Amino acid sequence: MAAVAKRRSASSRNEPRSVSCISCSRTHTVPGIAQSTLCPGCGTSIVLRDFDIQRPCSLPIETRGNVVVGRAGSANSVQLSCHNLDVEGGKIAGKIRCSGDFNFEGNSHVTGGITCRHLHVQLNSDLRSIHPIVAASVYAEGTIAADIQCSGTIVIGPKGLLRGDVLARSVQITPGGSLEGSTQIVNPSHLPKGSKPTLPPALLAERGEEVPNEELAVALPPEPKKGSSIAPLPSSSDSAKQESSP
Ligand SMILES: [Zn+2]
Image (cartoon, rainbow, N blue to C red):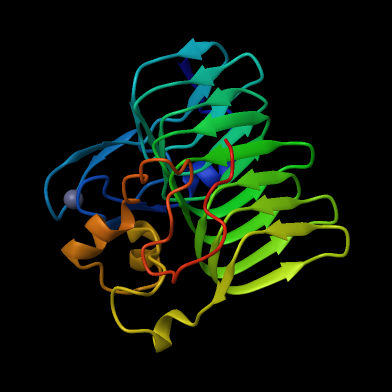
């Protein structure tokens, strides 16, 4: 595991960037070249380094920089918190928390939940999650086996398969793609508090929306129910299908 500044272009290194606090989700702006910062809200020290994981790594990673997991790499840490996460064929397993986008290529079973802005599961890839995936938008070119809470649109590509119960603002299934599970189409703003799909706190902040403390708790996926490998959505009504295999 090594820090890689090279993945950020020279121009992007010079551009100020917005950072959401790992502890309180407050956002503030830092110079693009910064390698660490202090949250002006709660004083938490935030690492901004990028990480390039090209071999097995079992240490937790907590940064607001970007993380790449290469083909020979794996991140089996309890928690992987970062801005953008790019899995290029390597394995991931723990808890994934991205304040940015999550691009996934490979075959992994995530046990600690996934929260991100945009999730892209590449063609011929297979991403499984015991806990619901919480994202602002999802593109399934490959297979996703998980329940999904999406505040925006889920797009299933022509070879995509989504196996799980879905709560989203809209779902687009390209001819050839398939969805195996229940679908609930919701407009988050028309729903009472507590039943809307929860955006990652970082995204709420990015959109200029208030991030209440309880929202942080809600954003964490619930514990999976015994006997079900995929936890049901907290607000979904009884659905026929809860027994997808991992
Ligand atoms: Zn903070």
